[in-house]
Amino acid sequence: MGGRFDISIVAKDSLTAEQNINEIITEITRIENLISDWKPDSQVSQVNQNAGIKPIKVDREVFELTQRAIKLSEITNGGFDVSFAAMDRIWKFDGSMTEMPSAEAIKKSVEKVGYKNIILDSVQSTIFLKLSGMKIGFGALGEGYATDKCRTMMIAKGVQAGIINGSGDMSTWGKQTNGQDWKIGITNPFKPEKVLAVVPLNSGAVTTSGSYEKFVVFNGKRYSHIINPATGYPAAGLCSVTVFGPNAETANGLSTSMMVLGKAEGLLLLQKFPDYSCVVITDNGKVIKSKNFSYKL
Image 1: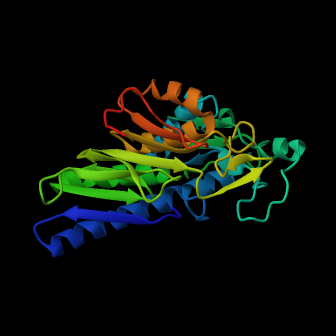
Image 2: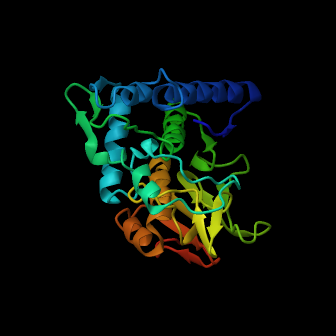
């Protein structure tokens, strides 16, 4: 999935822990082989290769993951869009950009993006992308989905506790060996040496989306590497969004969507998900928490 996974398991001995960790690695690899759009033989790549040509039959879990992604695309009015993978990469965040792309180039970059052009057939379990050149991708949901699946698998096996971290998308369960909850630190990108808050988790998920590592500045305005799939313009206004809740896949989708939608619309979106809370940091360093975030900052 293009990211690093860190796995911690509480077990009675290191051999048992290692066996469980290996099972998790096998499961992550299985999911990656289904949904990675970087692997040409994955089911998602097969769907993309047949855009505008024919529907492709996929496993039920790929179908249902796509269904949930489309639902999130609908709720956010395209602020999140599972077909963003077709976007032209006209923005560069490696220091090579000297001027903004033209409005025409930006508009053209999102021509093939549009979740409404994804046709699902539940009976046949097929996905069809109507436009040639369309693509779907799970870059904003896949790691959260994988950590959730692995947590469910370990709990079903009777594993008491653990934490699975997929590049900052974390699923936790149980308690540490000292009997305490897992402790998750929220970093302020403007003061990286200090932790904003330490949040205890014993059965939940946390994800962070941020622009503090990849961005460009034009005319004094900061543009993040997270692009609004509806407009083609980078998200601006928020530097970091951390979402807490029961499920990493949903939290992952929400944190990405909130970065795109901005502070006001993002907090309104979160109100539709009462089991989830958040901390957002604006581009000028202001820290804002949702009303239901119960920890002191």
